[in-house]
Length: 297
Length: 173
Image (tube, rainbow over all chains, first blue to last red):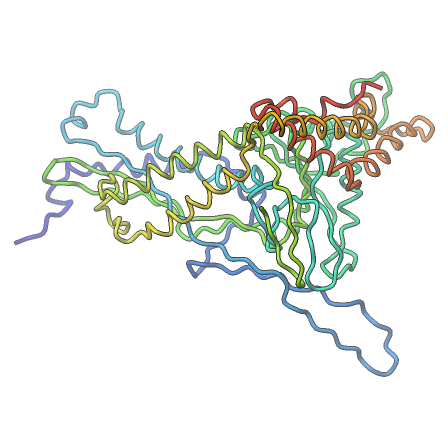
């Protein structure tokens, strides 16, 4: 018996829905690449390992002093799958004068975009509670320990967004030490805020002169930071973060085992076509040093 | 309770309740995941039968485990209104933290300071930055007091976001 094929049932399969899905999916500007390094793992479970820093360089007095890096904390990240689908009957499609099927495919693409943003943003939304780094405490925490000889450090505060608190936070981040208490070599250059602080953030980094006063002084914050505003998905308008781009790209990983795919198939018994999206991803960071978070409320 | 083992020591820390907005977002996620898992278990999910992700190929037990972790996390981090006795204790802690924050936090006026080119005029901004660094950002006691205030506020009135907001306890000048 010959197999049921798409070629034999052209009306069951509405091919152009996949094009609508793809076009709609591509229209969205995601904040994920601005914060995470998007990576495709080759294993279902990824192990992230922190390495101990090396000691200081010694004066050469005829012999080389050797040091070794020790393994520090580690954590694992597991693949999580996501999917959502719609079914459309042949009769509905035939009578669909208003393009509802096409709009549904576009809506499906929107939901996948929203889900991905939500997964990424929740990494920060939960940074004071359940987003854990390899040292088993929250990403933004008052007591990040070291198991290779360094002292404990903090990357959580409660100060509201202001020029003074931005400068103070930058000062503290510059003083971060490695996990063996060496001077860290990367400096903060990124501000991440929700919609509520968008204007204040733009004012801080973009205005040439000081605003809101009669004094026409230059704004020393101008151009010092890149501003990332994550509309809608950062759930708390008051909370804000300062980051170090280099380190964020090194440690903040958006693992994408399976990028968003659009599937379709026809059910000949019910003359229904099924259209679904599927993806699998997760986010993680073994280290806390890329960021300092302020939980104001 | 959050427990961390390291170098032979076990540290116990008080859990910090999350904000009402975060509770809502987490509850939404849990409900949605539960519906998805229920669908997989019944085998009635709309997605079953579609190429490359048969329900049978999905590790439902693992998904349930992840959901259980989310539920436990929410339960642990959910601010819970306390009993009368707990509220009395929380009120004392709240007032203690509030007094500390009022004394040490930047005032609203200092929060509004901007950098200035003129060295003399810039003093006020520099002073605000120094105060922010020493009294807030790099002050472990300030962080503890903020956490204490938020925790106590969660016991006194779990749904009141304003009560947890540190900005509301800054003096004007």
